[in-house]
Each structure stands twice: as C-alpha cells, then as structure tokens.
Length: 114
Image 1 (tube, rainbow, N blue to C red):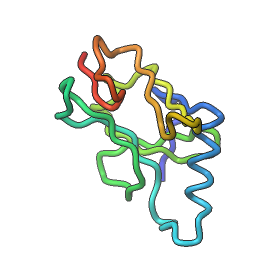
Image 2 (image 1 turned 180 degrees about the horizontal axis):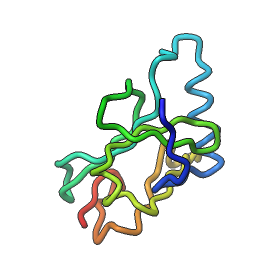
Image 3 (image 1 turned 90 degrees about the vertical axis):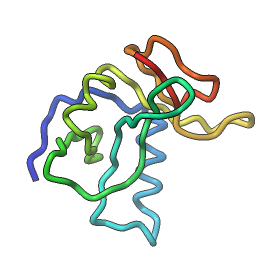
Image 4 (image 1 turned 90 degrees about the horizontal axis):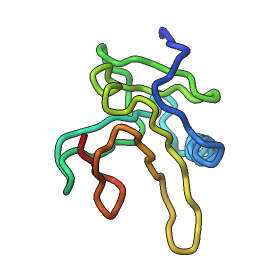
C-alpha cells in the first residue's frame, strides 16, 4: 500500500488518541483504515465523512501520527488545511472539523459550504 507523507489535513492529539482507542477495540476490523472526506448534502451544502473503510482504487493513503488515513484525491481541495479534533466535554463529545476553506458552516459543525 503506497503511503503519501504530506497530508492535506491534520489530527490533534485528542483526535489521534480517540482514533487509536477505537482501533484497539477487540471487535475492530483490522482490514479497515480511517476515511475522511466530504459528500453532498447537509444544511450548508456539503457534509464531512469520518469513519473506517476499506481502501478503494482511487484512494490516497496518508500517515498521520501512525494512523493510515484514506481520502479521495478530489476531496483534498475541500479539506486542505483542515484540522480534526476530538472533544470530550460535558456539553459536547465527538469529532470536530476546523476547515479554513469553509465559507459558512451549520450550527452542528458537520456541514459546510465553500
């Protein structure tokens, strides 16, 4: 599997720790990698995708702090410079996307437009 060293996105230490925690679960499918991308829809036009998936022929693979990350090449234009964080607070828990390319976002932070 070819790995490209320069990733268009970054993961905070909290995000890395949470992804590794999920990957170390006993029922985790070791044949899957972390996928980050976008899809049409959501209240602002595009939604973020984050989950585990198998590599497809048109995927690029990045190594981010020891985590293999899949991304479609076409998605990098929307995600370049984005930082993914994991918040574990009383009022909010989950992955948070900070995207410098987003011209607007929705209130939940899961949808954006460019």
